[in-house]
Image 1: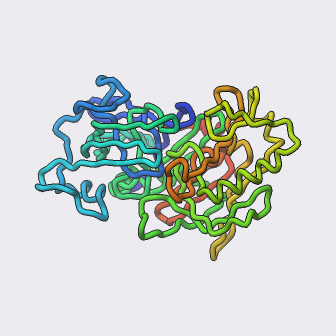
Image 2: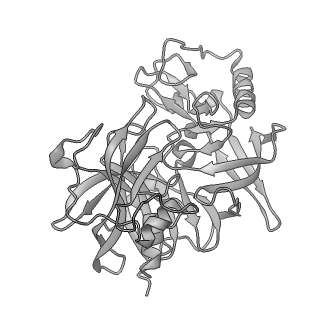
Image 3: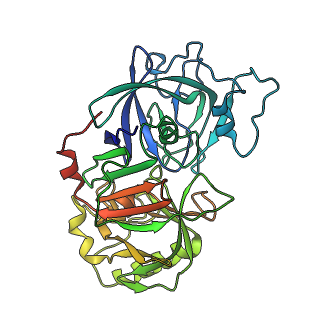
Amino acid sequence: MYVSWIEFFFFPIFSYFAVNLTVGKPPKLFDFDFDTGSDLTWVQCDAPCTGCTKPPEKQYKPHKNIVPCSNPRCAALHWPNPPRCKHPNDQCDYEIEYGDGGSSIGALVTDLFPLRFSNGSVFNVPLTFGCGYNQHNPGPLSPPDTAGVLGLGRGRISIVSQLREYGLIRNVIGHCIGQNGRGVLFLGDGKVPSSGVAWTPMLQNSADLKHYILGPAELLYSGKSCGLKDLTLIFDSGASYAYFTSRVYQEIVSLIMRDLIGTPLKLAPDDKTLPICWRGPFKALGQVTEYFKPLALSFTNRRNSVRLVVPPEAYLVISGRKNVCLGILNGSEAEVGENNIIGEIFMQDKMVIYDNEKQRIGWKPEDCNTLLSLNHFI
């Protein structure tokens, strides 16, 4: 029987967002970077640990709860390939790499997660996750020093998929990221709005059944076509910024630069926060948004045509040096390959819903601060 939904508060760490979860018995609190671009949840593990950013007392300690290769969860992790094990009773190892070059190596474990559901009940749910004993964080655009990653991708090893298998929630994820840096994450379908959501179907890519992929889409600038059509996009909350292929990126930059001719904005090449910045000082984005135009992604399918509108406030950031920077990056230079990735910057002040039950993604403009004032369960 479904208990509707679970809700978490999340908070900013630099330009990333984290949620707090307790794990184990007795429960221990950990902060996780929430990521719809990957399946596996993992936490830094005192096994001992190499490359960990948390001290041993803030790492997870395994206690005879290693998952063997014969466990179905191990098969779910490695699907569509079989686990690489010599014997069924060997520990189920994992190695996960991220688009920014970061990685985690470890073994699967199962432990209790005390979760409070929308009906007020608290269940100690046994969930399988990674005990990461070797981490690599390559650089300044990598996730911050959280204890681990909360993997919310489409794969069977993701936490939401496991909760669905227990019959506790439906396989639906939603989040609302406020421009003030706070927000809400919910698992289950109990908070999905009954109206006002722009829905478009997920692409069923047989070569990639783990990411949330949408398309075809057309890019619009100031409401007009850029001539860039048939774009395929990955929705990934674990990415801070938006990444486009070189062709798309160069067109966006060209259009923006053309519109800035004759304005007071001047480039700030000495600011290395992001590849393109304009000199301030600025205290708020409202001081410069009049010089920029909205972007939009138009999705057309057999049923409808919907747009994801991205105002300047949702693709610009204020740097630590008080300059304004473009939160859109060249994916080829950022080593994410020939992928167009919609990161959390484009998702600000929208409720974004990943409905795996109906194979669709939706969004709705929302004041995320209002949601924060409602009752929530942690």
